[in-house]
Amino acid sequence: MFNLSGTMNIHTMIHNGEKQFKCEVCDKMFSRSGTLNIHRRIHTGEKPFKCELCDKMFSLRGNLNMHMRIHTGEKPFKCEFCDKTFSHSGSLTEHMRTHTGEKPYKCEVCNKSFSISGSLQKHMRVHTREKPFNCNICDEMFNQSGTLNMHTRIHTGEKPFKCEICDKIFSQRGNLNMHMRIHTGEKPFKCEFCDEMFSHSGSLTEHIRTHTGEKPFKCEVCNKSFTVSGSLQKHMRVHTGEKPFKCEICDKRFSQSGSLLVHLRVHTGEKAFNCEICDKRFSRSGNLDRHLRIHTGENHRDPG
Image (cartoon, rainbow, N blue to C red; front, side, top):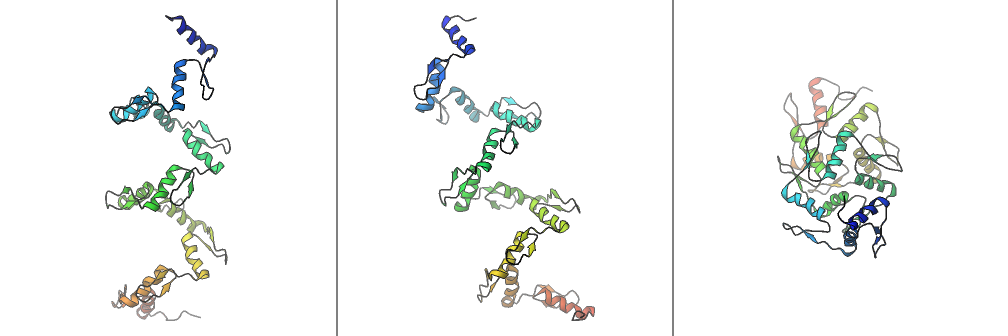
């Protein structure tokens, strides 16, 4: 029952869809004057509700109430599956989909589905090629703000993710997670052919090519193929003549870091390869191999 006829009239408008209150800025219509007044704050920027703890301002009292939970730690919304609690009902709704598998947001281009609308919005940039996030330093464009943040660390050198065991720092959380497997020994990626385990998915991918024989990295000059991109990069120096590794003692240059390390032993006198039979030492593994033939009696020259 309604006490006032005016209240009854307003309520009736909800049912008949009548909207008599018009925004003079954008012409949007509302059934209640109070709703119009709230809407006007979009245009005026008015934020009359202030947090007494941090002075942040809000246009709606409800938004202030939700914000206060940051300070109070209140999480009144509980998951009925795992008892995890949330400060906002919307966060609980999104979380519930991890249990139900529901993905109500569907891409109209490729039919891929997502559990939250924000993920669909980000995905759509794959199709539109929109890159709305711009690096202020080098003007490179990105389709996600998180990718821009990671990129910015290239310029700033910021490495906010620190290993609590060895204090090594990283610019990306994912790199820290992979690094932690050095300490834990975790190897979650298993080869389906030989059951060998790997700590990184990329290492597993490269390993599987030893079984499949796949060599996806092809030299455009001579058509030679390689199983890993690094091998192709090294190979390309045969064609380009590039020698990026320089001896700091005599300025001699090399196309591979391993060749530089071998060369440095000329200057240091280091002989890292030891004969287990007579303890004679050599600066190169090849020299040790030839020496061992003295002990084994193997011919110094391979048969014709």
